[in-house]
Length: 180
Ligand SMILES: Cc1cc2nc3c(=O)[nH]c(=O)nc-3n(C[C@H](O)[C@H](O)[C@H](O)COP(=O)(O)O)c2cc1C
Image (cartoon, rainbow, N blue to C red; front, side, top):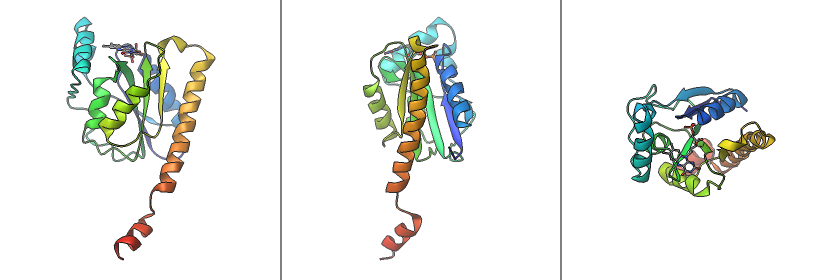
């Protein structure tokens, strides 16, 4: 797949970090961890995560990047918290990081129920559709199903981007339309 890809990851217990590493390898991407010590420091981290998630608060301190404009494709990877994307992921979706046209979401989950509503929340935060979405339950680690989830996500990414590129007007068309 062509293009410069960033996989932005937030993980407390390592599931999302493993998933993000896999995606980084598959897509020849740059892996960028989100820094949110509020949630990763000890047992209270889980409590803070649950409370912020339930209240839909998404604080995010300074990161190693201020803009993602240099990338053609961004994939956010992290856990589901209280039926929402984890707060640090929501902060990026809602924030002013100059996200490219292609933004996708890869979630890890404790349960097996479909994450459709979680994807809808993320698209609302972003204020536009996500190109591809997937969720990886913790208990499929080490099974063939896990590989299927990755492969399907990458295929959906490719299909979604080519659909997006076909529907986007070429710069010359935009000029013709605006110049009358
Ligand atoms: C505060 C909190 C809330 C969670 N809520 C959910 C949930 O609503 N649904 C679910 O399937 N898993 C839930 N989980 C489980 C995580 O989504 C799952 O274990 C995930 O793989 C953890 O990713 P990580 O290891 O990258 O932190 C929750 C975990 C935490 C810490």
